[in-house]
Length: 150
Image 1 (cartoon, rainbow, N blue to C red):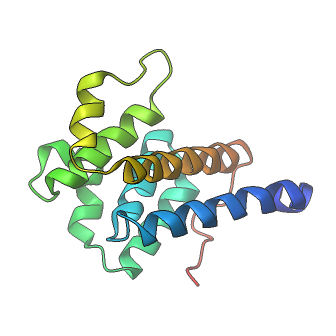
Image 2 (image 1 turned 180 degrees about the horizontal axis):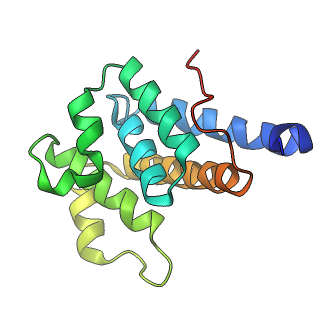
């Protein structure tokens, strides 16, 4: 099922939200390639093959290294990520796996140490939107491998 053609107005709304969130994040504190890591990591957690394929292709195109992309699922065990990236990845994981857990104060404080209020909101909105896309792509079995970067 092509969920885009089934509800073009609804999907256009989500596309517009994603574009706005990504632009605000990239124009703000997250414009250094961090979004590609966040989108990929959240997609890994959710098991969204289509989104993993898309975001790794986009991240490579934007200059992200193969080594860091391969190590992303084990970011805690590698030396390849900065403290700021680690804070963002921990925040992304907690917000993706939030059910029944919430966000504890220590994680909030640790993440807030690396981001302004706006940066933290931008990061959280980016996490929310990729979680929404993951759920759509998984629910309707988007064809992994079919994505072509612009």
